[in-house]
Image 1: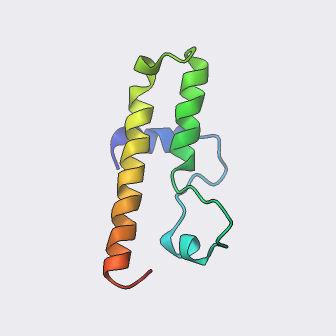
Image 2: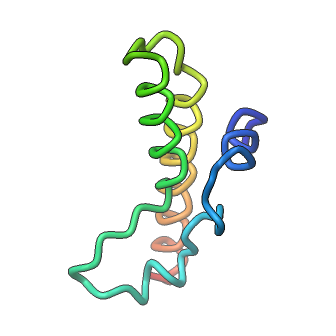
Length: 85
């Protein structure tokens, strides 16, 4: 994770500012939506709200969200490749 992602997680108002684990994702009910990057998504929307939807001021938040999604996809691919999913 980059420094901006770590900072966004630290600034989060969530009590449990952590990513969903692969095991939790595997064991969820099929109808349950689980976003492993919910903290970054929420921070991005908050930034937009706070800055009158000026996207140029929230680029660090968007980068953190993209990085989170890329890490999550890579982790799921690795798990599938190793037969863990």
